[in-house]
Length: 235
Image (tube, rainbow, N blue to C red):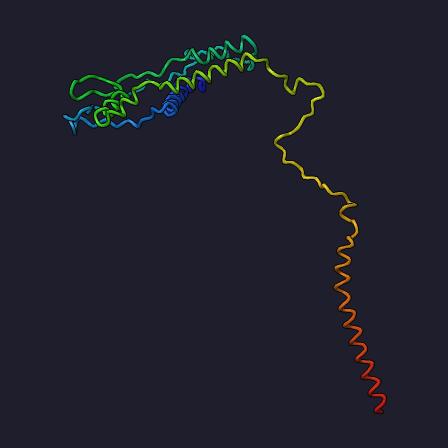
């Protein structure tokens, strides 16, 4: 229950702000805004402001103010289906209040004394220093980005209108497979191929290398026989 309230009041506005900044990048309107100057130091500068301390209202976690507290009791189900699930999701998203400021907040312009938000003060400071950047930030999306958004929306509508293909779970004779398991490498050669005899070309090469050795050994044996014969004659 508390997590849903924090998500609705803090997390989702931050995510929406990040999304808006990303869309400005896509549309070519992304601009780094300038920080407004302190009016105590620069009272005559254009866009100088008096910054105000901001005090936020604490988030109310009392069970009497949490919409989901009435559905948390012993014996209740944690999972819902159909209309109950839609009702609970809608209740968790729309029944929480927005984040409020109890006191302070924003900025006060030094020249006019008007209270404005921090974002408006940054835009005014940027307009004073870089008018082109401020105009780009304040401009709407370009025609090209609008055309791309329309094409994406049309493609999504066409995809929703097409029939959904039959999933693998609904097909008979489905074979379950684990796509996260590391594949096992199999040996493609059989034992007969690995233990096959050597080819004739290899035998010829080995035989041609062995012939000179045999001739050399026979020549050496003939020389020894001649030496023995000469020694016997002298004796």
